[in-house]
Length: 289
Picture 1 (cartoon, rainbow, N blue to C red):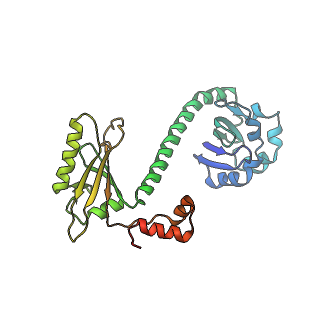
Picture 2: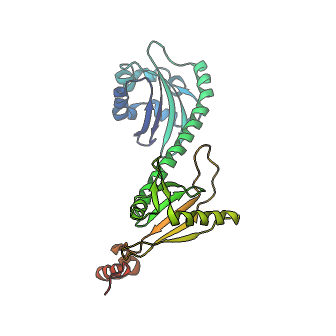
Picture 3: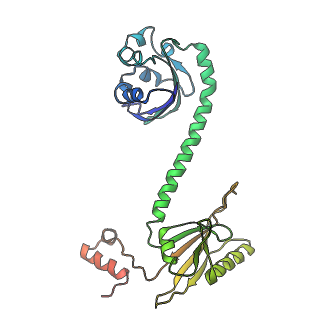
């Protein structure tokens, strides 16, 4: 069956693999013990991307059948023959698409090479798309992690002011007010005077032909200072096929929340002692002398 393999060309350490229709335990042995002894891999490094290769095109006649990897691993596990092509090559990482064949099937030939070379560019393009999608997912996960660590609340709204996503701090800060309610579908929506002011602000910005920042004050009882809600537009994106597109970013600031500056950062940036930095951080958080 076919497999995808990425490894370091200097150390032969396998960085990533994806196998189909083959025993995972056997492939694990290859990854951990035999990849560095596979004499086909060093011989293949000079071959260009998208060019299909076999043992016969890479090695002198009979050399593969005489080597340790063939006799003590590949032949025993009934996967002695290979046709492969590079999908990517760089000094730090190479990636290949490969198909293994059994003893009974026999070595691959020129006809097989021609068939595989028609397929390889499509595999390479598909993996490039997959790489971009995985990178976007990783980037979004990192942003969401930061999203929930900042001391102020953050929400993403669509063009009509509906909440698409919200940080935990935003929900926690607004839950003690009557400005936010959970809808039947599980999403949050703004209600009351704040909701009306928010929609009025969005509507006025849209009528002017461009999006501008706006601020709303949310009064609170029990002697607490009002919350500040800052609305700012997000860059325009291509319209989604099915889902609402993000259009606004809403920041929720609570003046009652004390945020201490990092003492080490203050000490290093201002060139002061640790004790001076500690005092500066406390004063910046609202503490008195």
